[in-house]
Image (cartoon, rainbow, N blue to C red; front, side, top):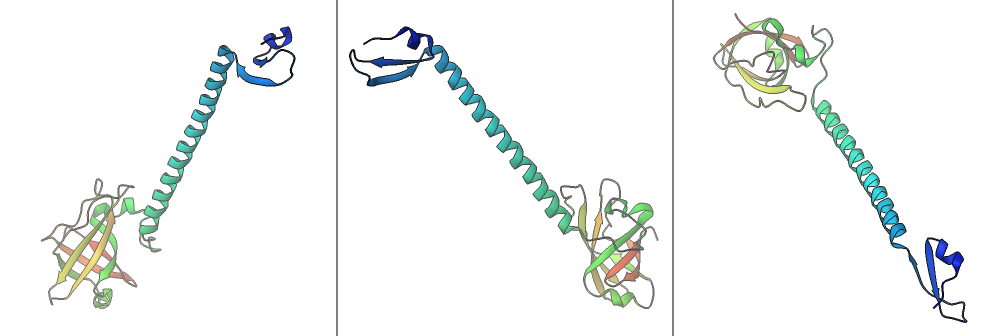
Length: 177
């Protein structure tokens, strides 16, 4: 086997049989092989890191969008601009999810809070508590109290609240009566 001087200076060494031009083996010298492997590793690491960051961003976006999709829009004229404000001064705005808000069409009524369930906060820190409220004639409604429990408390079972029809299937509630 022979190695020419020009070949010895290059990073790739070609081994040939004397008197032929057939290449038997091509290999890099050890220093270049290590550098090439490190470059390959760095490129794989960069691609892997880029894919991980992209996946994380997509996951956060999907979670945020699905969380926002569950939150009802605040009806106009409710006096709040965000569910984080709901409960300020004991005043709540809530959709009726069982029963009919129309039983309040004749005016405000005093009701007794019977339940407070489903209060685990979502990813945005908002609770969507379900409260059943019973009126003196035995009729009931169940509302969803969307609020930030760390700022404004839940309605308490046994508590009396003033309930008024707001619009459609929405009511306002006042605690502390």
